[in-house]
Image 1 (cartoon, rainbow, N blue to C red):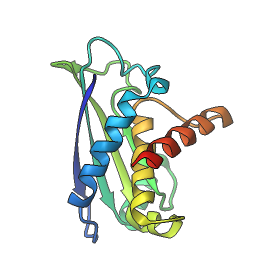
Image 2: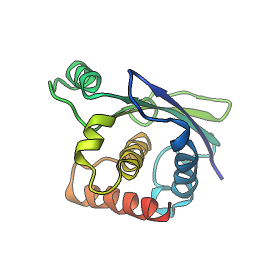
Image 3: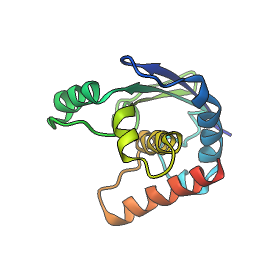
Image 4: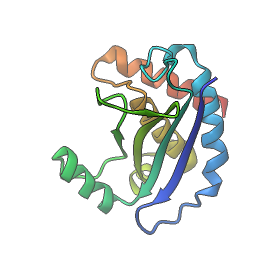
Length: 158
């Protein structure tokens, strides 16, 4: 089975307690990596036995600056994913490890759009980012439905 590791960081001051999320994210990844539906990702190949990525938390001001600089959208958003592996034909695997990229989550936007708890919203946004890091997108309704199905399935198991 593929192994995974991640780092959690804060890009600015916020009240999020990172250690509260570490166990749930690990569990989420265990479930995710066992799903048959995601094995179509190019990340699943014999050369790769481990993946790693970063998860960063920030406020709306910071994510708006990032959104403006990299996506030409001058507004805050809930999550931005910078995929370093699946979006790059020249991506490198070193010692059977693929560095997938970075997920940036706005705590303030997550707080505003949550339907249930803030924790569930943040975990859903992280999982959404992980799906992007593995090459899944939502440009069509079919792709969007696939992503939502995976998110609901995994979050429901936590």
